[in-house]
Image (tube, rainbow over all chains, first blue to last red; front, side):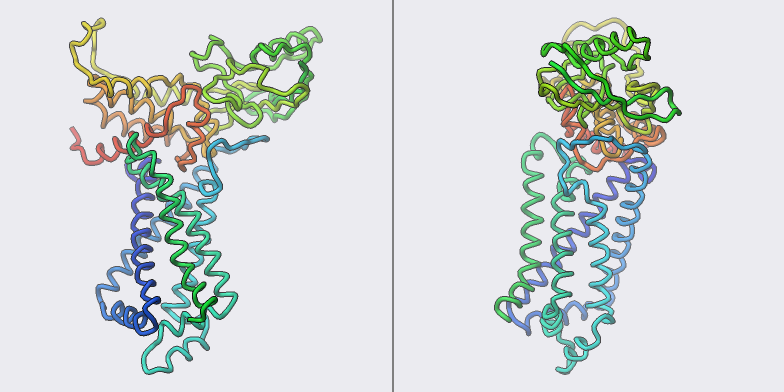
Length: 219
Length: 249
């Protein structure tokens, strides 16, 4: 019944969403090693690679979670458009903000970015010149790769746009998680929404600070 | 006061509809929007034209029968109001007022501004009740209920079933309506034993009847004439999770 009911689908949406959020928090904390310099970031990347089978288990879980979240998102979007076949000629939203109304679209932007990010950083097919330059030091230099990538205004812009989508998506998504798993009570309702904005803001600021640091200080 | 009305007219469920304009003259500011429509209808009848069809019953905000989308908001912009309680003083003199029926696949239009809300009754029939025989009213306080629980149950029970939550929801979801009923009964000792069966049946039926899914827009709460809080949707979600782990009996 979890697949058939609206409440069940929202529950799965919330659980897969929160797993991806936890992944993103971990990823962001890992990225922070950038501030300890090139060796720290490269060493962090080496450690991740050294995890071997564990890394693959994690990748498979995250891929499953992502596919489920996207498939459910598309299903919900389609069902919702079916449930309201005729729209109002005049419509004024009272409560729904831009974030909640664009979840599907910000989700698509994030999905497109995840695909691009994996092609760029993990599979390494989009920018051969960068990969060659980064490989020149005996081992693959993630720091050098990030630095060269952010020197391209296009890559930086794509990154910034994707992070903005993450910010908007999470500002609604985190609060929705609490609602969908049934934790929106008299006690939590006061801080859940503010909390979502704060968390989304912190993640956005941290993730964007890295290209900003390259740009401003040429680190 | 005088207004220009843009009203949705539709001859029948499958007939094509469209907006028609009417001028409402000599409107008193203390009139409700329904009384204003009554007046317009009187003129239409005098002219031998078809009056605008809309529903109403008690006209004191408790029956849940009236419901129009006024200027893009179900029951109009003022909060915690039913359509019948919406007074003309809330509008500007000479303003154009757009009036549409509730829009949702599950609530089809019967004629003009009148919609068929059978789906909401079918939703209640799927489990929104207590099936034990209770006999006549029991002696007060024979079953102790904590004041907090009783108040919360009554907050949920305030729902008058008007369907504005469905109309306001961009997904035409009936979550607030269903959540209110599930929470109301789950909070009280009489309803608790059947809570798992109820939430499973009602959430399943909601899907079958063609209501959409909740995107947590919270438009429903904003237009609810009885100010029912979305925390009851969250409580329903919690009851749903509890039911998933409960052994089938």
